[in-house]
Image 1 (cartoon, helix red, strand yellow):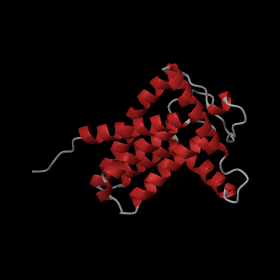
Image 2 (image 1 turned 180 degrees about the vertical axis):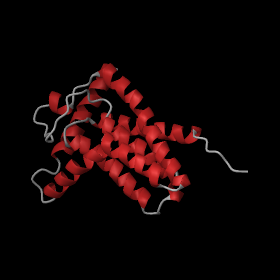
Image 3 (image 1 turned 120 degrees about the vertical axis):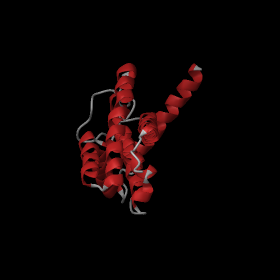
Length: 188
């Protein structure tokens, strides 16, 4: 078992370094660096909570409900995130691996799981599950944004791939549970 875990860690570290340094010194570097440095904030609490509240208060009935589902998924999904961060206390990649590129404001709290990735997936999943209420082009854009936030967390040296996968899983599953158990009154 230990041999298997060491193999996984080795390959996860290699994948992180590949993502973290992949575009350095290339033509696309400036665009991607700016994009990923900007989009990473879309997984933050301020952005996701504010957008959820805007949808909840400004949207018509069905869309307003989706906004409340987004807000509920955000709140509930961060309970397991807080518990897991407290239990595992995993160092961030830039803290444990040499020569990892980092963003301007490195974080010091535990790495596992990614809270930003959890938040963006908890935020977009109710909209994806209720896609018929939104313009057809919104779902692919939301998925690109969510994946970009997860990728940015690795690119900025803040999270390992397993942190991002766990965060995406927690955010998505929490939102799906909220969707499943959310009961809206039906008019007779």
